[in-house]
Image (cartoon, rainbow, N blue to C red):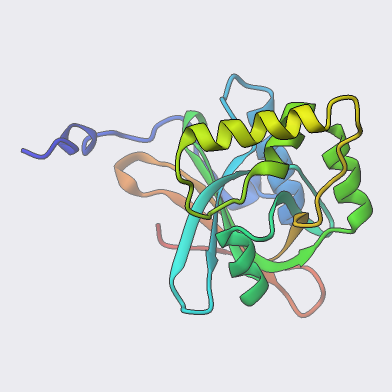
Length: 214
């Protein structure tokens, strides 16, 4: 018997999702669901899986924290020299997946990637705790690291050298925004007959909503 077998019988019974419940605007619908999550006891409510594809066509995924969303799309920050940064430079599209197990809900967002204005990146970087800014400056994200002790030494050296000085945003630390071309809202249901709705742009400038097989 596989170790995963005990989960096979789990049922999704907490909620349902009907077409009449959906807002015609996917951003507004996301706002409703996200607001419910923020008002609950969910750990890391802004965490999502970011999937990118490099020039070789191989996908890569990791957990990232959402830092904001508006009419432009969904925003986050990262080291542009990291694997995800290189992927998005080579192939500026991405997929976001939010999973809130306590609500048995999932939201997927596929979109085109662009850069946030440097002013916004500067303002957000300045708002971070000083130790986080130091960590961002010393991490050569995605590169091979000889040892943990080396990273800690580099951190302490930077901290000592910049003691009493303002730590500015390094050029490689930038903001990204994913402008959606498709949304999916998924609500777990009994017997795996989940509710799943897709939003895609319509010719009139609005959104076309379709129920999908789960």
